[in-house]
Amino acid sequence: MVQTVLIYSMGEVIGDGLIKLPFIAGLRAAFPDARITWCAAKGETIYAGPLKGAIQGYIDEVILEGANGASVLDSLPWSRPFGGRKFDLVIDTQENLRRGGVARRGAAGRFVSAARQARSQDWPVAVTDRLARLLALATDGQGAPRPLALTHPDALKAAEILLPAGQTYVGLAPGAGGQDKRWPLENYLDLARRIIAKGWTPVFFFGPDEAEDAAIAAREVPQAPQPERNRTDGLPVKGPLLVIALAGRLAAGVANDAGPGHMLAAGGAPLLSLQQDRRKAVKFRPAAARLEMLVAEDYGSGMGALPTNAVWAALEKLVSGAS
Picture (cartoon, rainbow, N blue to C red):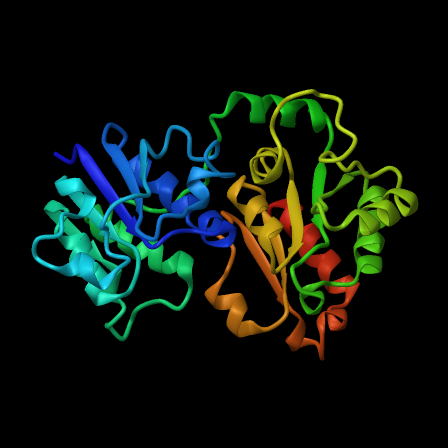
């Protein structure tokens, strides 16, 4: 019987952490009574920061300190990774063989290694598929990724207040870290107007550095709420945790290849992902339970080549549940 589980990684920034959430949810479903420990060997993970509330009830402990494989010296025989602790199951999610050897020393029972799997010819390209492979190996084919169900009470309450029941909400996240990844804002505004004409409610998600775009959207489409801004609920929830909670109230979401898209997917929203090129679209595919993807290079050069009519058709399909 598996009573203790160690998940071994080098650490997670926001994108990595969001992609891994369905894996974490599937892991907890497979081992509901086990104590699950996450080790970020380089000492930093988003699970100890902005996503701490999202993994509440899924991960029992996060290890950030110790000689856990980040240094070559951690591989020496007298080193004691994980403080000398042993676990019934260890899943090594990183692909370096030396570090994988350090992770192996924590296993009292089964050891599942991405570092070994990555040397096989059929190792998947997509990160989500790699995690699904590891989970299947650890559970004899019984476990699989699944949508994360938030348990954070303040996050759930904030989402209920900000997006009350009774409307069909469609999330729109026009931002991205690079301008080349952004479908033009005017196209998102056009999409918002079509959503309103359909009788649905567009909901805009803008990051902290996108105040100018948020102001344009508020002026051009005043019917579309921006729930992260001008809040009156008074609850101490913000950032990725709030977006994930809000995503659970959406009929669908549309986002560029950026963090907000992964947040919407993590919250369980059916997602239409607008990607720049097919290679990245495959490798970093959002871990949405229901996913549609449109790739700009299939239509021309640059994100502006994606036609609004194609995006609208894919969105209608997603909201209707046809995908």
